[in-house]
Image 1 (spheres, rainbow, N blue to C red):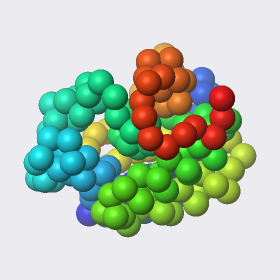
Image 2 (image 1 turned 90 degrees about the horizontal axis):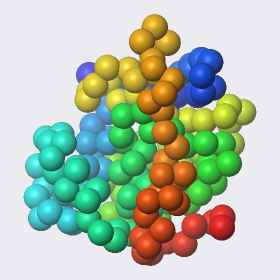
Image 3 (image 1 turned 120 degrees about the horizontal axis):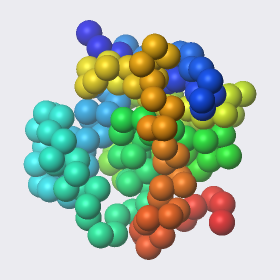
Image 4 (image 1 turned 180 degrees about the vertical axis):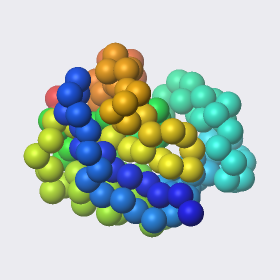
Length: 164
């Protein structure tokens, strides 16, 4: 069985596993399926990256939907300054989708607890190699979820950001 691992990240330096949740299908694949159902009218669980790209390419999404989708992307990280926003966005997303996946409430609670590390990211063991493995990470690849959203998607609708 695959797992979802929440990683504590010190960009450019190191990472470590902060929390491991059994059965990764209760995290990213469930989120992807829920959003595919809403936006593409498809519910299958396959991790078809073309479907994810199609959702991402939608001109204006509720910001919290795009934030949750972004969090499941390779090398995505939430910076410490954005932990409270991430928790709020996850909870708003859960409200919209009726909690299709069991891990997201626990993940929101971790963000709310404000762990003492500069960033958090995911290793979704069912979908790809550990993007945070110290022996292979290229530190030019990680990106900040909320910096990208603020810069590239200022017109996304819905849940209002806590900051700005």
